[in-house]
Image 1 (cartoon, rainbow, N blue to C red):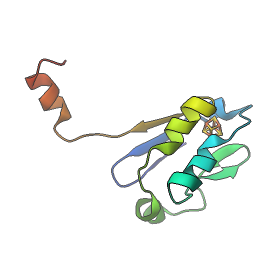
Image 2 (tube, rainbow, N blue to C red):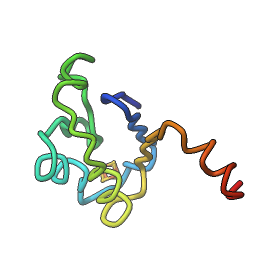
Image 3 (cartoon, rainbow, N blue to C red):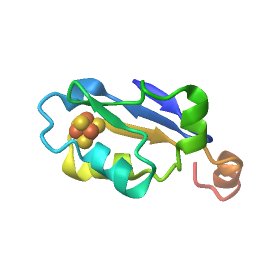
Image 4 (tube, rainbow, N blue to C red):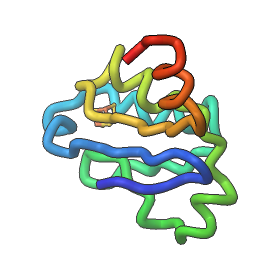
Length: 95
Ligand code: SF4
């Protein structure tokens, strides 16, 4: 599943949630954001929120990705596009 916040996209590879015992993403979301992730069938879910609520409540803290990487099964990837980054990297020979 995937969902958008204001400027980022959160992508969850739900197959990797099978057997996860920590559900660290949920705790991280409650601790560092506004608890937009809910646990449903052993996986994170945002089905209880509308797209508008996700935009309004999401803080884009990235905590779910961090905690899932270190305490879960590495199921979360967050895309955080930065305007101008590609041009900057090209200008400084970083491509
Ligand atoms: S911590 Fe990662 S692997 Fe575990 S339930 Fe959350 S997203 Fe899935």
